Image 1 (cartoon, one colour):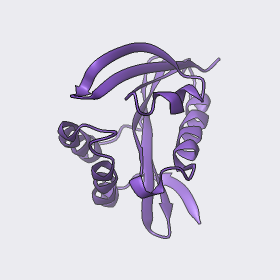
Image 2: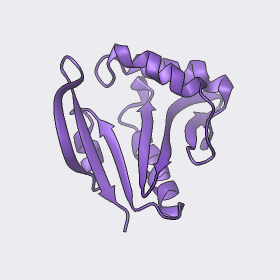
Image 3: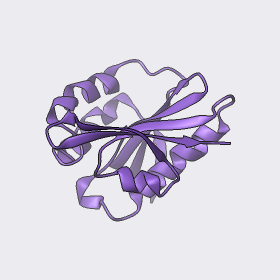
Image 4: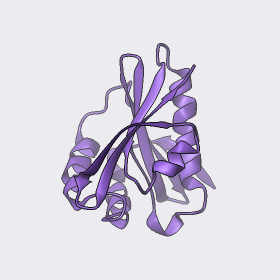
Length: 149
């Protein structure tokens, strides 16, 4: 049975393995150090990070950070061999539901690549900026936003 739960420090290795499995198509290899630092940094209470676990295996992870009226989707990813099984949809829906419960949050924003831009557009996110090679060669940065009202 799969369930979402809060990230724990003993999940670091599994989350880094998710990242590695999604490189270089969805993440630039140069981003790994930033992700590792994110995972090891103290987590403020208004920045929940979730993992999707099934029988002890971490299948997906992703979180939210709050900045004024904005909530930012952070470091969302699904195990490469589990793409196409709606786990990314479940992860995004869980983070959307969480964002809608946070007082004062009016907008959800994210930075993604051209490869997942269409996925997030399906949830109603609109492109606010597009930077060719913004994450690295061949990996564009696409900034998107969704009004929560």
